[in-house]
Amino acid sequence: MPRRRPVAQPAPVSDLIMQYLTDPESAPTVEGVLASLRKLASYLPEE
Image (cartoon, rainbow, N blue to C red; front, side):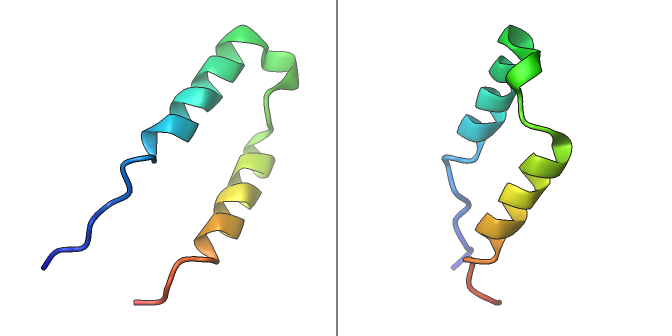
């Protein structure tokens, strides 16, 4: 059986896009986004 991909993935991406379009001064930095993604990835089970 193939692994299911999370369906909530597009939500954070669209939130980041909206943040950059509406208030770029308070948008997170690339480094901040990558650090958050790495932290989330650390909770995923190993294959």
